[in-house]
Image (cartoon, rainbow, N blue to C red; front, side, top):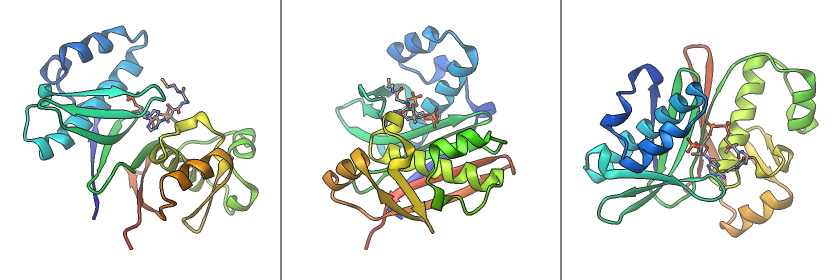
Length: 207
Ligand SMILES: CC(C)(COP(=O)(O)OP(=O)(O)OC[C@H]1O[C@@H](n2cnc3c(N)ncnc32)[C@H](O)[C@@H]1OP(=O)(O)O)[C@@H](O)C(=O)NCCC(=O)NCCS
């Protein structure tokens, strides 16, 4: 496996002061909505816990910043950097690290009903081989994970990615960025958590 990931429950997250740097603590206190602050905090905790396996440093000696497009980068005391991917939703936060480069994307989503308009807007017709909540949630999570791997997030329409039988096809700006990154074949690891959430990790296939 050329990646590592960590899934944590938000209930396991210790007090913010125990693992945030001073700058991160200020950021944490800036959130207007408590739920958003707690999800952000859980994402920071998952990412730092995972990175601590590599750097052998206390969590407070690592700091996570977002680039201007939102992608997270972890800086360890001493100058080391690590590209990570973070997702947080409800009871869960997840973080992933690539061991071979900077291409990694992770997403966790709650399995829940969505309106027909959502399906029509975000998916390509051929992808819609089923309409059940679990299938659509996982497909959505795959798209987000791939868009994070490319560093795009939702700055492009999700229809610029088409996933058929776990094979990813790219269009528009997503295609340009994917080509710029060397056109890696993408694979997925998937899990269902508590029968209520879908976890998806997207990573480049090593041939
Ligand atoms: C990436 C995005 C799709 C995630 O949406 P989401 O499902 O609501 O949230 P998730 O919990 O799954 O993921 C959020 C994490 O994705 C990561 N992320 C955000 N933008 C990213 C990007 N361009 N590339 C890779 N990862 C990204 C961040 O680490 C973020 O968590 P953090 O803010 O706590 O560090 C979404 O944030 C996005 O792209 N929004 C549109 C663009 C936008 O508003 N940009 C503003 C940037 S400041």
